[in-house]
Length: 168
Figure (cartoon, rainbow, N blue to C red):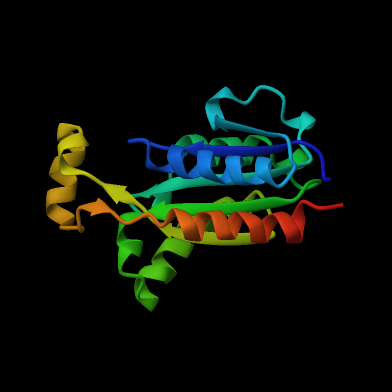
């Protein structure tokens, strides 16, 4: 096995956390030791032999703490397999335009790391969970509300990346 895997995430309302947890659980079932944690809680990146890194997309970008992590750890991350995933509510209707915009959110991250793979998943947006400021912005954008995550597809992807990047 490729050593301990870090599944790191940035989230505002918990959707990306739940996806990261599902990925970590699947990787553990496949025989890997994993830590699943918020980027801000990672103290020692050098104990990991690979990373699955994700973020919610807000305002067309990864969350700031994810970007800061990738920028700050880029030297070590260049030495291990890095796989990225993004969650966005607009991906519930993944037209070519929507997909290109979601991939654009990772372009900034790719200045710091060279991912083996980038995966996009639709997210979850629940009106009653939003803070007032976010609710105002969302009202202007008129995205769909609901939970569009497909955990079977997420687990299938975790199996795929395990066989491609995290086996010795």
